[in-house]
Length: 364
Image (cartoon, rainbow, N blue to C red; front, side, top):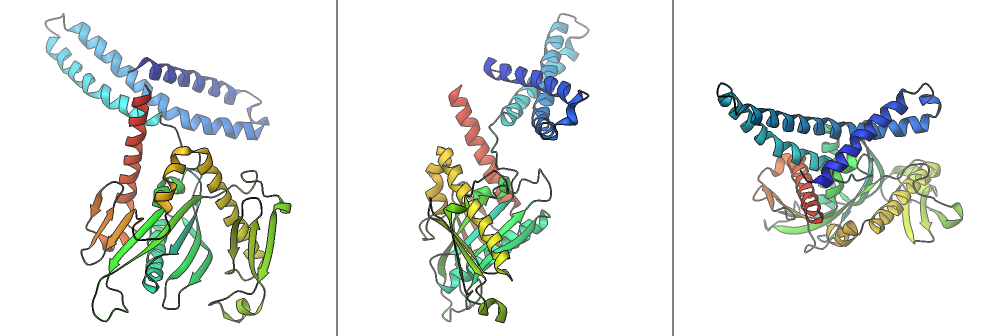
């Protein structure tokens, strides 16, 4: 193990001991904000320290076994212990390197998911509906909550655009960590229901996954910077939604970012939803500005909905789904469209982790 990594790990051991002393102090709970902050930091550090302890124990086992080689009666046993320790040490070192990779501060957040129909007309809108169902079913399997904030339905079914909020079931549910690589162009190849000649059509949708902004302090929305317009909702929704000016459009004047919502039963509900979307979009811009690596790939991930800008293809005639970023092809389109995204999401996370490890190795 490199000295730089060992030094960092030794500092974390010292820091964990220091946190434990602070949390054990009689007045530790007098400042609950600080208490929660220390508790979260401890929860992040402890797994690293525990793994480092296992690594050091393996080093000690190796040293003791090598010392036993001089004893003829212990030589065979020592050789077995040496082999086991030498096999275990590289595994533990890789695990430690992964644990030391920089954490995305947004990983544990809930998300706003936006799906928009792109090229392909009505078929694209139908596919947007299929994607929304896919993500909803995946969220259901994770016991997450899905709340539709805004939807523009197509006449033949599906959505021209749909925005929903996906909320985790606890502080460590990691909604964003699992879905953040879904942003980009999604292409579908299939025979549309409206196709009479049986020809395969290609259409596309864009998906954007944004970490939700905290209600307080995460994004500063100055009322003076907001222009709020109300208008009459259009589309499906019954008499109430079509006969009152309940739809709300909010423009953030400094950035020009716009969010609107018309699906709620009241102007108040639509305003709250629009503010939530607006805050997430502003936060998304801020995150991309702060992280140049993410900013440099954003265009290729989000795209414009054009067929050529794609991250994944869903080919129904061949029953396959291909993620072009990691050259992964799975012949299980039915189960994937039914929400079984686990294999794809894990593969994307592992590839991202491998890239981070490669960058870390280059820096050392």
